[in-house]
Image (cartoon, rainbow, N blue to C red):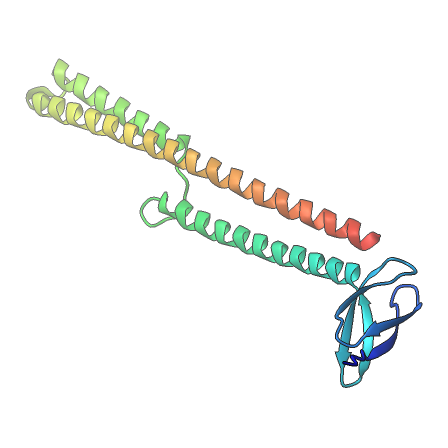
Length: 187
């Protein structure tokens, strides 16, 4: 049984050395420079490509894809935070709860307490008892509002801190990948 193998004459894409490769082989190592080569066959001809360069291109593309993915995550996180931030608004306005809201509730408690005390001391004449009740109800209503605002302010602060931490982590990963990409392209 005579088995003849057809051999192709190729050149190493790295060092240019002449290679004699069986026709059915797809990968070969150059005996001169040691480069791992992939053999490409097409209707236009046969040529070799250094696998390390293919690997580098693949890695670069994977890093670029990771950058796109991370930037999309950052955009989604920013959009989600904007919606959550708006949920803390009051009366349809987009505003974050703040210490001014607490101050307003405290002033309201003070005014209600003064009305209650004036009603208790009879400063309003015959209808003072009604003012006392209005003042007491107003005081406790303002006290309730104070605690509600305090809770909302704490929830907002925790949500903002979570957002900032996640955003900083994403931005750091993006910056690290961009820095690595710049270093690789400089080489």
